[in-house]
Structure formats: C-alpha cells, structure tokens
Length: 160
Image (cartoon, rainbow, N blue to C red; front, side, top):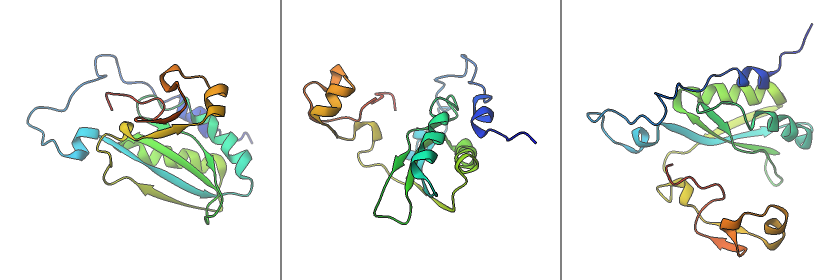
C-alpha cells in the first residue's frame, strides 16, 4: 500500500486566479483587526521522536500552499515539553488544513496550537530582529547590512 504524502496534497492547492489576488474587503465590511488581516497566524507545538528529521520533513511544505497557507519554518527547540515549533500563517479558512498537513507528515506524540489574538507591533512584519555577523556572512541580505539590530523582520512585506 502506497504511503500518502501530505506535502504532495498541499502542492495541489491552487493559487487564486489573478483577478482575485489583492482584492480588498467590501467597503461596508467592518474593519476590525480580524478583517484587516483575514489570516490566522500562530504556532504548531509538537513533541516528536526525532525533531531534526521531523523538521526536515516539514521543510517539504515551505513552498506549498500558495496564498492559502505558509509553513514559515520548523524550529527544533529545547527547554519545553515540545521539541519542534512550526509557525504557520494561513487564510483563516485554511489554518486547520495546514495544521493537519504538518501533523500527518511528522506524526507527533503530542501537539498543541497557539494562535495570535493581537499583534504587537500592530503590523507583525514591523517586528525588530537581530542579524549576527555570521548569519550575514552565510545568508547575505543587503537590506540587513550592516549586521545587528534592524527595525523589521527578515523578508518583511510592507503590504502585510
């Protein structure tokens, strides 16, 4: 029996048609934080047997999902009941799909999710970051020259 590959399923999600991309909410729709963002952002916290191997598996999803969801990265961590943390940014209606794909891929012993309720700063891409000398040398990004503290996240998108 062939194994199902959740990453393959994720690649099948189609991008919205070009005519639908960048559409704004109707003018009569109340502009709360939820309707401004129309995204669910949060973390999937996982306890897995081999976190390095699981992180490698999750990396198969980094380029999947189109505008529906983004599996941001996979962080192997210590000092917590969980040993793998996966940030996810998804259209509200696709959050559960993204979580289920990651869980199906790595088959954790346990998992939890934590969803963002309020952003501080209000535009999450304006969060500060610190780029070390070594990171700058290995992954040259001219916008972070010189290395050190910067007033935005790497890959910041001014359009949210």
